[in-house]
Amino acid sequence: MTKISADFYTEIKKFGTDDFQACFNCGNCTAVCNLTDKDNAFPRKLIRYSVLGLEDEITASLDPWLCYYCGDCTTTCPREANPGELMMTLRRYLSSSYDWTGLARKFYTSKVFELSAIAFLALVILLLFVFFHGPMTTDLTSEGGVKLNTFAPWKTIEAGDWLMAGFLSFFLLSNVFNMFRKVILSRKDLKIPMAIYFTELKHLVFHFISQWRFSDCETGKTSFLTKLKTGNYNYWVVHFFLMTSYVTLFTMIVGFLGWFQTDDIHSWWHPQRLLGYYATVGLLFGTIYFFVLRIQKKNEKSKNSHYTDWTFLILLFLTTFTGILVHLFRINGLPMATYYLYVIHLMILFPMLMIEVPFSKWSHLAYRPFAIYFSNVIKATEAVSKKK
Ligand code: SF4
Ligand code: SF4
View 1 (tube, helix red, strand yellow):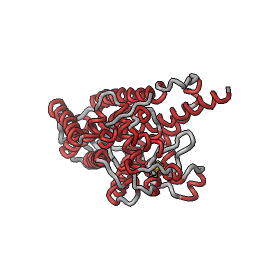
View 2 (cartoon, rainbow, N blue to C red; view 1 turned 90 degrees about the vertical axis):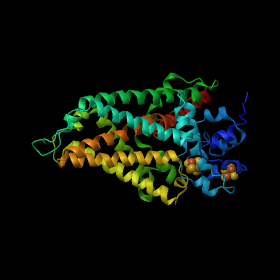
View 3 (cartoon, protein in one colour; view 1 turned 30 degrees about the vertical axis):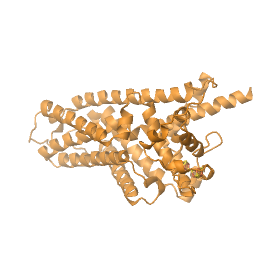
View 4 (cartoon, rainbow, N blue to C red; view 1 turned 180 degrees about the vertical axis):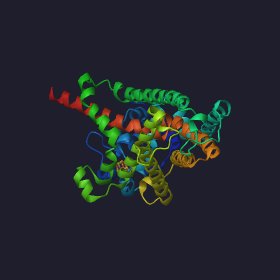
């Protein structure tokens, strides 16, 4: 039986837009969308669900994750119902509906809660350093660098990193499992052969690494060569650069900290420094690029910035900036500046990862590729059923 939620409009408004009420169901938005197809006809279907308050249908839908926010639907909507922004709002709403802790909902609906959580986690890091830091020494290494590992031994920091990575993985993956429950297990009509979960895994891996639908969003579903020729895929290029940068940095600090956080100053061409520079340039360039887009508000996807978009960008930028300062102070032999900046750097990095990865903006890194994977699993199952 279809359940209608009378409060859905009030509920969805807390996560972003309420313009969708103006929709008169003409279908222009779906007609212009580069990413929609006959199996996932969005955004109109989702707008109808939202207007009617069909909460269960929305939480069981993958469509919001299959939209990469080009904004074409919004610019062609005759009623200014802002369908692109509704899809964005629904992604926030869905992230909250998968999250069993209730924290995602709090972060997305209360600025005060988000800022308090950031301040609290920053304070935890500060107190840990106040009570447990190693000796602060003004002695320099033979190359003139700061002895950072005397103050913050990499083995201790690495143990903390692993604890944090375990926390992030547990909450993010349990939320992905909830997504699976709502989208796949709730479908009583769907009997998915186990083999299909394996044969479709390639989509999960490919889209996790490439985020390829961002480029389809800009240029339509064309080949890589056509995209190269038209050159209209800047957003995907910058997003890819940014994504590979933070994945590189995350891998180095969680998996290889002993190799990354050294007191030795390697030559600039050493892989440790080259990977660090790649990640730093990617993060700096990417965050500034998205800051400028959001300030200029020239294209549809950057016109409506939610406070969580700003928080994420600011934390990412400050993490990068303080990381650069730590590096410069360390190699130039400025011990006190290095030690204080290192603590400040972790006071920004830690809350950013703990909040953004499992509960807020960064969780789309997992939800988007899983949505594409689940969508392909459903399509493959339906294709097998039709053949029978
Ligand atoms: S959102 Fe706009 S374009 Fe889409 S169906 Fe409604 S009125 Fe038409
Ligand atoms: S924002 Fe772009 S990808 Fe998303 S529904 Fe609208 S037209 Fe489609």
